[in-house]
Image (tube, rainbow, N blue to C red):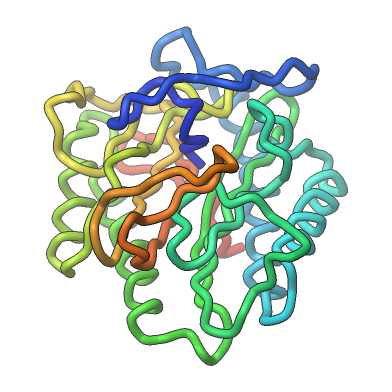
Length: 286
């Protein structure tokens, strides 16, 4: 999950950090150690953390249905993350109150699950979650067109978002650059008439939920053209709007929505860079 809008230091909107959590628990500060290359031992632990995330998201895809509340999905995610031996990465992160972000339709990111937020037939539901296992995080997001009533427009937006993620990942290998990844995502999104949300980026992930580097989804002079190295672990997460790229944050200080009310979709994987490609640690096909 990148994200947590007010909390990441590197967003195009320039928002600063606020509301830092004081409770003890997983290391949730953004990494200050620069870009880290993980050891084989660390990568194996991240495989396990990411497998937990993938398991929970696969279950949520199966159970999400009209009439359920997003709070029910959140309870399921927290219970399963803990049963699988991990701790929810998001809960308590800078005060975030839940184990998942549940964002519906024009909600872009950081939707807070609630008992009164009922999922309707036809909704486009984004579920983002993370797990902290033996000192390391896994992080992933899916977009779910809910029920038979989901429109072709909603399904197409979700499909293109997922495709753009895979287009970006196809460029990744030791010796490739973050700019290549960003360009592949942007080109696929814009070729289908959608807009890349520029306010939020992907990120490094590992001992901290958010580490360096920022992983942009569009070409920008703000992105150092970093060359990737085997062992780097990244959370790559394109976010697309059907209309304008512009977003705003609601009064709850978390939920981000499109300014024009258009639909939004997001897909995310945690990966490790290898010599000839990347390994998708949060792959749900197992």
